[in-house]
Image (cartoon, rainbow, N blue to C red; front, side, top):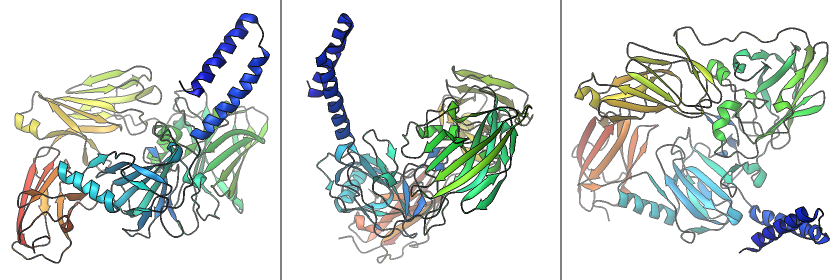
Length: 593
């Protein structure tokens, strides 16, 4: 038994003695002090952070910072610019060992995870490749498994690094929007931390800039609060100081703010670090982007005014806590961040905006309490569909019409939500994309009336705003199709009988191709999308990296797979509807050494 557990048991015994006798013995106070000090010592040991340094050389410039709002999640790290180049050296930010290596087409792409003292970890994502022995280790595994996407968890003693050691090279892999290094620091519970709090320094003398201020009348949960939101005009009255138009209201109200921050040497509109809100000088809300767990990041769309974003493409952060929103970035909440306005009284609501370097912007909102109903009529969705179905937050719900059925799990939405649902001409209408989802729902289509050939090429798709079908991951059991989805809107069943296309600029058929370092093949599928691929030369598997952003497969000749001059390349590509295409080309190249 550990010393900590022994002390904990003894502490409980003291407490039991006190309950029997009605008083606490002197030894209890001495022991309690000892137990408290020991507990603090244990906690301190558990959360001692190592010293982190920059993972790349030179002055750091950001294209993204910690906590900013992205598509359905908070950004978990810093996006460090690499001057739009690939191959910039990346170094270990602290002493540690490689605990995880992942190579994927999407997400973080080629990513490395280091574990450090005290259980802290750092993440290096969108890499082009790893350094030396790690790259060899991954390449061997990929060839052994004959697949590009792999995830490995090496033993603690396999790859050990000191701070400043080379671990990889920056790239543009995965879901990266351009060459950069995504860098994270995580605590012992794998919760992302703001790297600026752990030694990473960014030059920043520019204060945050507000883009839009909104206010929301509040009466009770479930009344489409976002529908009733209204904007307030902001006027700059000084350096980094703004005055809002006077708000006339009464009852409980809340505010929302669109804001960005720029750092020196960069024009990227990144996120803000802190937002402090006061009513007549009393703190009612404090939003601090210091730590966000992955369990919490799914609440980003609850924290954001989702409806306003769908309508205007402006991200507004609510400066109050809605129900079913446990975000830890919301702190010091008085009345959950809502404020009470009485008729006949005057108020001043202020918002202080800070970046990590404490550059400050001030917004002042004058409020006059008036005796009127400030609740506005809900905008509501269009009356395109007749059925209005209540989807409870606390129970699962199923709905069916025609050949479709939809299953909404418990807590599918952040609160009980009424949806307009209907089927018309084999099209499934699931309201409009106005309500964010906490969990995906399931669509089932009964295809008993379809031929076997139709079923073999059928898939469920969501129509984008331009009417283009977007493939949803569809499974089939007999004549039944099933897919999960996380966005409301229009869905349907579509048929893809067109196989993928494969093309190659060089080498031409029968051409010598000895000087090139890499081989590139273009693969495309205009309907259901690429599902898988496989490439061989002279019937031997070759590793080809797929970049979906450029629709390109790339093979590195340094892999030295072939030991003869004739290279018979064969590429097979499969789409999501079961169509496949085979491409072959013979070319000549000096045999690999």
